Amino acid sequence: MNAVVIIVVVAAATGLAGCASPALDARSAPASGSPTVAAGTSGGPAPTASPICAEGRGFDVALPSGPLIGVADPIEAARKLVRDGNTPGFGTPTSVWRVVGEGQTVKVTDGRTTLHAVEVDQHTWLIINGETCTD
Image 1: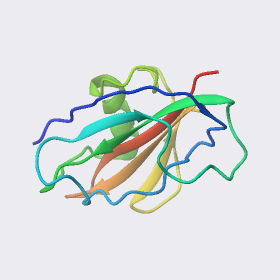
Image 2: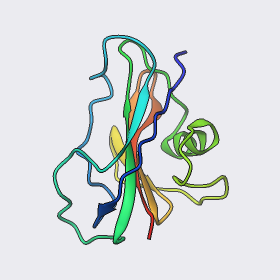
Image 3: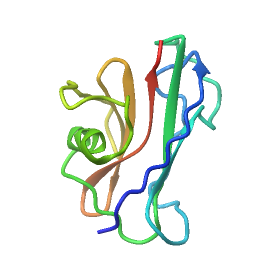
Image 4: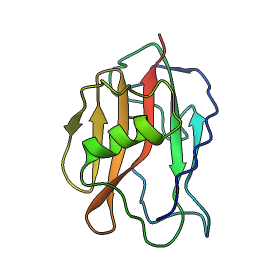
């Protein structure tokens, strides 16, 4: 299994609305190597929903090509990110996560942090990006 490499670059964003990033296809990835994460303001369109916080930060994961094996469900993917993900401030070991949505791409939230999980190979789940409030 490929290891996840996370690079965090923090930048302030105003009006984070739970999910500013567009849905990503987990199989659209760099040609080779391990997944990487870059954090900062979302590269997607400006949020149109009501903001949940005045300022925040986020990250995006670049997944490698080839087979991707995650964990059993989106909540476990969030817990794994907190435990292993090198993303301080994006949830805690005691966060109470809940899944929002259905299908192959869902949100996992604890109220101030929203993570996006995608279903990958063998019906497993990976976190591909997230936002959190900093105010």
